[in-house]
Length: 246
Image 1 (tube, rainbow, N blue to C red):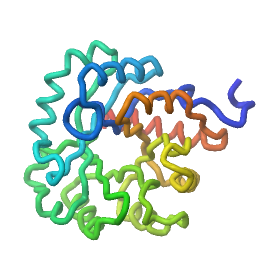
Image 2: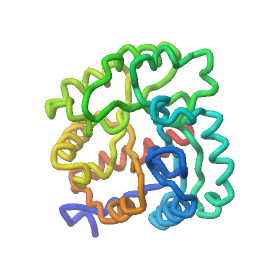
Image 3: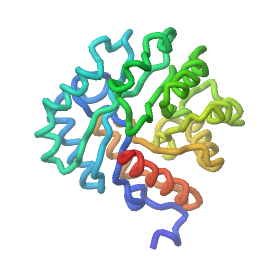
């Protein structure tokens, strides 16, 4: 049994809900073709996945056509294909924190925001430098009644292993989402070390695949979770399930 081993396969831990992926085809740097998206969902369903929140990039500079209306329409176009895979899908968004986003984001349009569930909104920054307005944006989101979820903080090169900067973000009522492949070293040793440190400190609330290609699914299948991290990962998986119903 797995509890006698030093590590356990991620697929054995009850991966039922994914809250971060780029499977919606033809809208960003993720999947391009519908048949590949369908294949990905079929493979994930075979791993136990039941629900997937699709999170295309929302960043006007790179993807000006990605709006709540256009993303919902795109999902409607592939809904039949996706439903046949056995995975229930809905669309949210991964919102880039860029200069001026706090002005472009209107709380008056709150009903048209691509949320993960309830009022939880996924946000991200550049991997190279911290957005200067990140704290102001988080403050405004909170004031508007939203719950910010910062994607993959372990991948941000400017956040140190001491977690001082990351803790200052969570102190602002911001949740953190782990890219689970970070625990397998997919993004490098530094990201893995930071992911483990954040996990051990209990700062993550959710996890996601951040899936961009089918090849990453093979990495997921091979992913081993250290035995000491299993309870923390199981807590995040339960958080994913709860977020779907938020």
